[in-house]
Image (cartoon, rainbow, N blue to C red; front, side, top):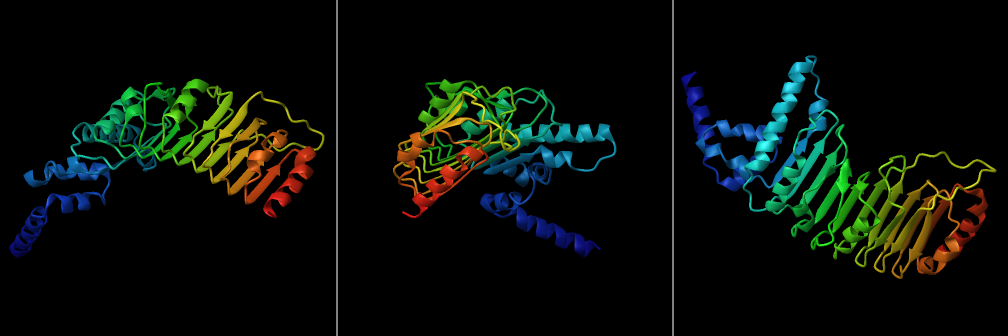
Length: 329
């Protein structure tokens, strides 16, 4: 029995004797709250967790854990949030490679998420993925976020209020995903795109049933953009025979000279304006109506593979003919 204890102690000392980078690798394979808990093992482990290059906090996983006692469940969630808050506050890695935050409906509304984002900017974050689905209204991001020089990949999802100051700049941003976020207005959105000089891939998902979606002209004018995925899930059933397409007075406009591929799914009845796409190779368009196709023929003329579908029976024949003509080039 004594020999087993001695052997266990020797093994533990050998692990503790490993260099910091190897200990960090070990902690990267466990949840953040487990990594933080290692601080009580010994003095050697006290601050190892503070230099982790990747931090993942997913409250959805906490909410999915079975717990019959609601009081214990609330206390456990509060402890988890406090641990993550402390990990952000004390983080010391020279570069935060990845920060993933997912906050579900069960998270407390008094959590200062802006503080976490600001801290990630101070830690020179490279990849930031932030999903906020709490019961409160949309939250603003700190101004420092909009001037993060190291940020290369960004995902913002759900209750996030996008207000891009005109003086800000994201010089390294290559991949951007905007999933059901709330935009301040058209001017702010245009400013956002114009201050991302190397943006290569853009994904946009909109919920047109959301009353906070006040964008009338969703303009994508990005000289460096090569790939675009745009989905507007209004969840309106396809038009039946005899139904008319209603003009929403809203528009999706593309001015993307480097674009190679785009996929658009849009059933809300918005109009389209495609300009300046001389490099386009592949395109997929699934929409309710495309009455403005004549205005976009020049921009689509260079496409090598074009797939189009509309629920508007009036335009189906025209689109089918147009598809064959372009693919046969």
